[in-house]
Image (cartoon, rainbow, N blue to C red; front, side, top):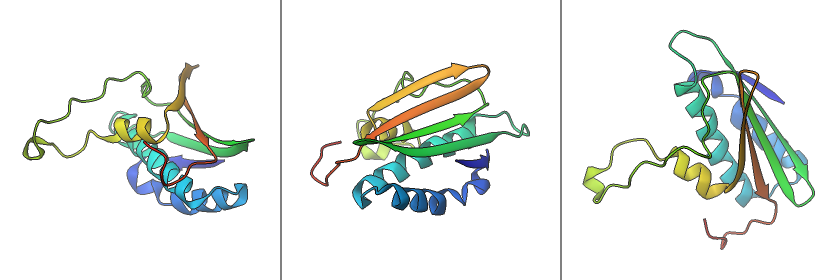
Amino acid sequence: MLRLQASVPALGPFYPWLDARAAALGMNAILLARVHVVLEEVAANIAMHGYPAGIPGEISVRVDRDGDAFIAVVEDDGVAFNPTAARLPARPAQLSEAAIGGLGLGLIRGFCPDAQYLRCEGCNRLTLRFAASVRPSDAL
C-alpha cells in the first residue's frame, strides 16, 4: 500500500510505486497506461479538491490482482465525493469554447467503467476494477 500526503507536490512517488507494483502483478503495458491515467486523476482530484485549504490529509492506494482483473482501491478522509455518481460537465460545442480542466471524471469512467464508491466512517473509498486482458483495440 502507498500512503501519500494529499497535496499535488507530494504525489511524486506515485508513478514509481505503481510501475513497480504493476510489474510485480504482471500487468501489461497497455493496461498500465490506463491505470496511470485513472489513478493520477483520482489522486490529483483528491489533492486539489478533497481538503479545505490548510487542512492536511492523506491518500492511500493499493493495487492487487484478483484472477482476471486488477483491483485498485483509493482511500482518503477528505470531503465526501462520489465520482461514480457525479454529473459529467457538458461538452463544449466548439473547441474554442473548451475550458482547461473538467475532463477527469470522463477519463476515469472511460478507462474504468467498473468502479464502486463507499463513504464509511468519514472516509471515501473508491474501488476500481480493470480487466487484465485489455488490448489496444478495446474501445473506451
